[in-house]
Image 1 (spheres, one colour):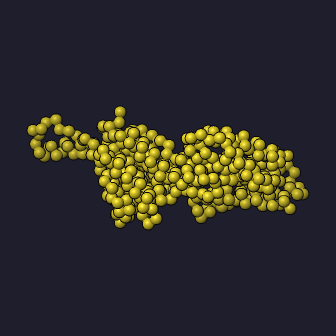
Image 2: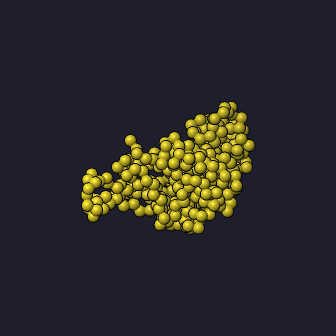
Image 3: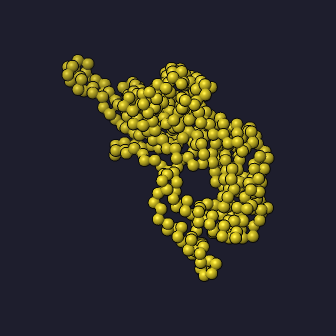
Length: 386
């Protein structure tokens, strides 16, 4: 059984609520409250676990843009959480940034701001948990135990030597926002490395589902299980369907509707934003046809989702896009048996795209191969339209 637990929550960003405008009001409302609702879920989990501390690392808020209401809500939540002796630890890159964060929140009781080279220590009987960071996005957890003396009459020098605190375990908790993984800190063979996504992703390109995580610590100082709890209000999901050789708008809408309803029924978040990706079986002419039908099919999907019966607490859904699958392989074009005549150039283009020597796009979030593949498909679709 754990002697203590610490809950970690990454990248709350309560001053950056996602709020797209092209959806009905009830969807927009859930979207706009998602950031604070996800943070509330992390506080609730820490309270239920009777956690010793809640660590809010990464970007909690920007003092220059946070609204007074947002700051007041968070300050009240911190004060209520700390009322029973618990603490909230936030992170900042510099001492000046730490002071700005604390001032923006009104310096609520129980708030400690962690900066590089300025660790926070949490005593727990003979056990001390030290939290430190090199950046606001990585927290190092070290457990230190001071051995108890069996012989109170021991000489002072021997006593000092025997009771020297000992490091028992060390782990690193890393935040990960983008799907393209940033370079993570190096962990030694005696350390454990955990990775957490944002509490609430802001778009489909962010890494992983929204969760907070609890780290169990034994009375001997050993780091135990790292368990996660869902916090996200909004999730993104790709829904896939296939367009046959003769399928037109009505048939595509009907098959897509069935796929859409099944995908939404499996979703666990209060709001899911879907994207319909249509597999065209490597046929450029069919992809062009899907592109022309996409606007009408999107309208059908939105009408379906908006008129679906909704009970309190059930998932709301919205479709943001319908398109021919941009990840579809070019192999059927490159490997076409008849590469003479009109098929020669498409086959050469597809083969060239598959082997294009592009090592970097200059942005670690961009996959060069995906960019080249999409450009090749666009070219092939335009050629078929002509």
